[in-house]
Length: 166
Image (tube, rainbow, N blue to C red; front, side, top):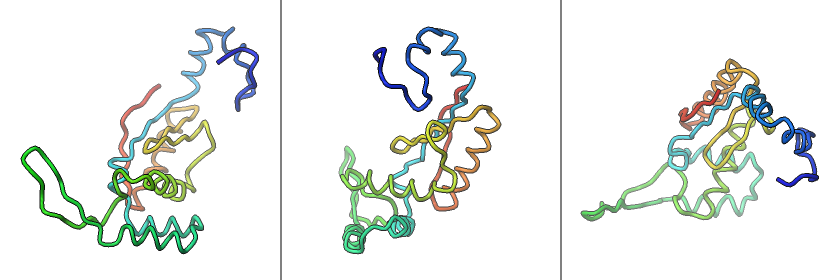
């Protein structure tokens, strides 16, 4: 960042962080414990009933709701590998891989399913299928993680811890 620019959500100018140097890095590192969560095979695990529920809860217009339902009705696919491909089979769970609509649908599902546990940035941040949970203590991070895990897993999503920084 360049000096003299507008402050961020912390209202601390960049020049302050620059002047503090390594002390600022150590302070920030000790302030936040971060847990990065990976929603295991996230697109593959979105239950269709949850997708419909979240679309309705988000206020998606009925005509768009029906279009998406039609796209997912009787979905079939094959698996290709070096020695050939499987017979077609039904796909009854998950979002379509490679669809331009899937990232939007996934974000909508995550927004609805995490509504009761999500905090404002920088305490909770979501990036695609990753979640960052920040807190002032490791214990609070663990508590928040369990709240997230409960909120998502009871709705059919699977959460796995992939990294933790102290």
